[in-house]
Length: 139
Image (cartoon, rainbow, N blue to C red; front, side, top):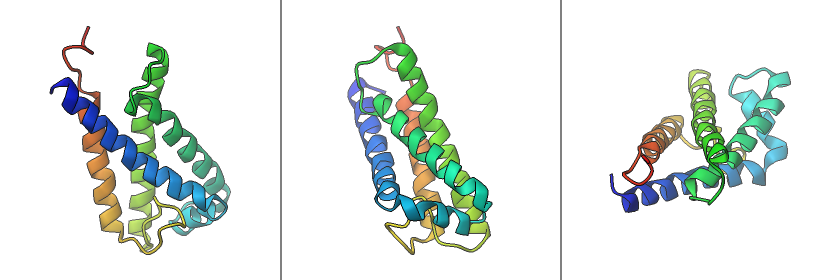
């Protein structure tokens, strides 16, 4: 994969994560209740919501190609996979319990769960492609 294609893939992935992050933050006070409706225990919904938002935020430096240390880039890469993993688990729980998608928080309501799972799956593919090494990053 060329360097240009890698940057485009990172940008698209970063934008998709940013959209879900902004949707979650616009109605954060209702976000834990939305996660509870997906089938997660009420006492775990607020910590999971906080962790998800923080992990999504820390995944952005790698995706927008910030010039930071290699350790920070590594943390950002791992955060990207962790955030999508949490989103996938929450989406599957909501699907299994018959609720609407919750990855957009309470901002965008009544999103079909299959659509949300497909979106997270596409974000997984894009994130894996963004983490593939190019000739320049392999050094």
